[in-house]
Length: 453
Image (cartoon, rainbow, N blue to C red; front, side, top):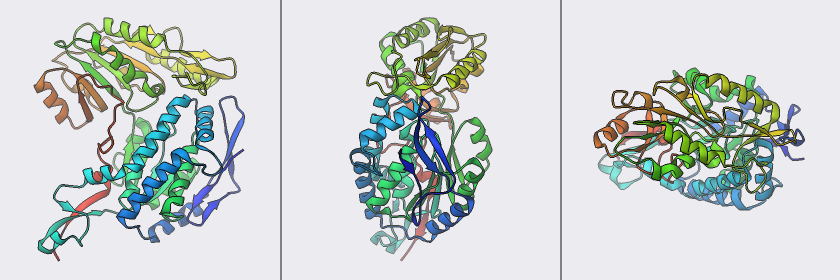
């Protein structure tokens, strides 16, 4: 059974306090060391004292680490063993974990695209640039240490903090205790590729110590639900990453039948566990035929163990799955159930259950359920009209707008709370390397200074 040690500035550290990570059947899968408060404080101080690597060295080390992460044996696990472990513990289908592995590797190998695309066109990278002789804007860090409270819902979330390393920050990652395997493997690969023990650290902790990591860092990023967003909304040092509440809007002058594949992919791609998966579908006109078509397609998805190559839906222990089923039924009261009304927990008979898709039709674009995001394919289909306007579409990570109305597109692009707008037949989970996910992280971590030499 693997031991996931704290990866601190002095190398791996096996603490006296450890936690057992179990798979879906309840069998021990690994032990996770938990860092005490004093260790965390000293680790962050060590990061602050460590010099940043030169930018070209950082970019090359990230690319090397990405390749190793996806292909090599790291911390005693092959890539295949790592992927199987993550699937068996989290219930994320093995093919989704495998794709996420490749996505993380590509993100690390192409990190220079994010860095260069985020830098203002008028700014140079260093005061040594000849342009600084006559005066130039120089892009520079706002701090030295960046902390991450990572999520455990999907391995690919760990692409999100790689930019900080590329920008020269030293990074402290607090992994999710649900899925510490991906950050442990990634941090190990980064350290071996050249960042060393004081360039990036892994600090597993309990909830009592977690706040120390953020408190001692210059800036931090925290994943969580609406409660986490509310907690840190007033802290300028913290970038909260909350629910995506991604949506699809279909206006009356367009045909919805040709984009059913896109709707289903938006809702269920990657097992429907990501923040970019659509949870709301708004239709100008009658939403019933759209809901019926989506439900018919999602109903055909198979219930299989997460480690089965054909699995496409998430799995969790039976008791939590039944609690999610009960929670959904309560929240869906008053909505028309096209799929999932008779239950979403499909018992596999081994102590685990598949979370099956759900599709509900709402009466209003302002129904509270449109803001509800769950860790499986769950869609709320609602009517929309021009009087409702942009209001029901706010607070959205990705909005696919199937429309030809240029004025409406102008409004959607201008709306500050909509992070990304895809116009036309494009699934919400689509992402391009070098393009921002929820803005560039560099927008938060960097600033420009005028330099004249």
